[in-house]
Structure formats: structure tokens, C-alpha cells
Image (cartoon, rainbow, N blue to C red; front, side, top):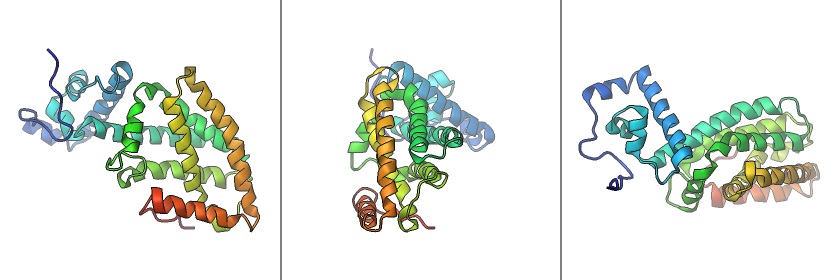
Length: 251
């Protein structure tokens, strides 16, 4: 008999969890349990697919009550948000290390994007969930939403590091806002990766290798005063239409 469809938010009757559960949720053991639930969910998403994985299955595999699983993650969508955060953290750590030997901007951008692909590749089978969230204007899990700002800011910070550690000549007038534009390049790569079915994301990696030098060359044009207004307008368009509410970076 098929398992009843689970609620998307909150917990159902009988899944409230024990008093002992609620106490442990506030302890270091609770932090470990939360990490275990997320790790288990990602493993099941990879093995069984996102749609087929239920919160009940995640709880059973993790060895916790269903109510406890819902305590930490109100729905599978909230697990996806936690997944964003997890991937962002791994990406930041590995990208900063991988960029260290490089000073050419194109190489640093390429290394940063290849690192993201490597970190995210094990989860490509349920990556269509990214698109579902991205196209829903009301979803708090959209990459453009205020709720996704912490993860977004982590990636933008990596781009800022890529710029500042490179030999690229960038006008100080636009340097602080360029990482936001680079984030849009990053998002274009992510979208292509979602639909890429080539082994090991080969075509996405080829796209990275071909577009990173192009992006670096365009950025190099910023040293010409006549081009700078185009960068400023592009940044304004992103903030007005895609990231309303985001404040420009400060020096």
C-alpha cells in the first residue's frame, strides 16, 4: 500500500516527538542529530531520487522519530535549503584552496566553477528540484529569494576573493559590485548543469572553460572609462529586478 502523501510544512498528529526529544534538540547532541538527518536525506535523495524519498524514510534511515525529523526540517523543501547551505560551505572551502596557486582571473573563475561542479555532482539526479524552486516566484528556496541570501552571499564572497587575488586590472569604481555580476555567470552555469546529462557533467565543464576567459576579458574592459557605465547599469538591473533588497557591497 502506497504511503500517504506527506504534508509540506509542519508535523502531523502523532509525530510531535517526546519531551526527551525536545530537550535533546537544544544540546550538542541535537546538532549532531540535525547533521545526521541532513546527511541521511542527501544520501537517500542520491540513491532513490528526491520525489521518492519521504520524511518518514529519512527518519527511519537516520534512526530518529518522524516528529524529530520535522522538528529540524519542516518539509523536504527545507532540507533542500539546508542542502544549498551545505554545498555552499563545501564549495567555499575547496574553491579558496584550489584558487590559491592561480593569479590569472580566467583561471581563478574556471577553478571556482569546476570546484562547485565537483561538490554538487553527486546530487545531480535530483537537481531538477533546483529549477522547481527557481521558477516559483513565491518560493523561499529560490536562489533569488531573501531566504537564500546567506548561501548566495557565500558564493558572491568567493567571487570577490577571485577578483581581489587576481592580476586583473579592475576599476575601483565598479570592483565592489562585480562579484554580484559574476554570481549571475555562476547561476547560468548551474542552470546548464541541471539539464546536462553528459557523463561527469563534461559539457558543463567545457562551458566553464570557454566562458571563463570571455568573462575575464569583459571585466578587463572596465579599465576603459567609456565602458564602466555598462557595468553599473548591469549591476543596477540585477538589483532592481533579480535581487531587490540586496544592498550594494561596501568598500
